[in-house]
Length: 100
Image 1 (cartoon, rainbow, N blue to C red):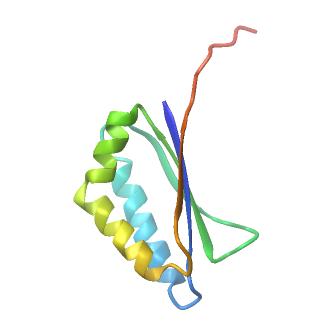
Image 2: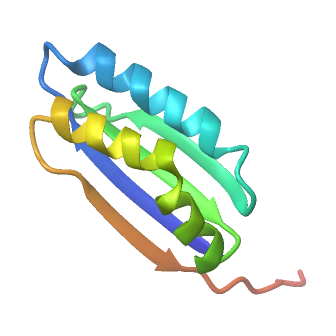
């Protein structure tokens, strides 16, 4: 499994449009094969910053997600509405069953 985190900071005049685009992106992404979880949150310390948390079955599913035309379109909109660049981290997760 992979965990993906990302964030984007809006300008005050673009926040609502960025949030709307982010919610649309999240809802659509949840329907993609291999998507285990996809969410967006408003940072309580910086209300202009949106934080994304995603879980994907594997790298192949994530690569398909990144190549979907709607994902590319969302990234373009996010860059246009952002006050600063976006940041994405991809982290492999080793799952271990714990008996206890």
